[in-house]
Image 1 (cartoon, rainbow, N blue to C red):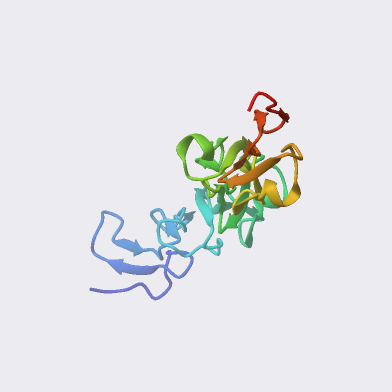
Image 2 (cartoon, helix red, strand yellow):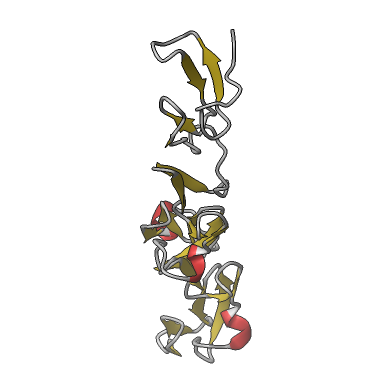
Length: 208
């Protein structure tokens, strides 16, 4: 194999003799092509991973160059891409959900008392599902995202703890001539001996 002293090969191509009817051939650098390496050869920088695109960018090959475009969820010029905090702007989370930013995206999670995928959240009826913590002697009323416990008549407390009211100690309804006996959640009035009535009203039994 011989090489030309004064090579017709351009751009540092290597000239070899005895291969063609012209008496030589050019071994071109990767960037060039043609008989004499006179044409610039498009190199796919994306394919060979020699671009300077950001790790969070897509590389698109173009003739004699390439283009960097930030991926969805990122912003920048393609060579430098930073995460977009979707939670600070418009996002897909429901009004009754929390938005949590992640790299390149975000996550929606329904608030306590709601169920769903975060983009759609519906109220949980804790009273109907019996998942509340109301006292046995309290009523449960569902509200948006929660519930309210209220002690039933005859009991006192915050609804989660209810204690019996001693109506006799408060002398609420029994007649002056009646005995009051406290019961769970209520009381009983009984007229004294010699009186008749329902305990709330007592009159003398003059026939006895």
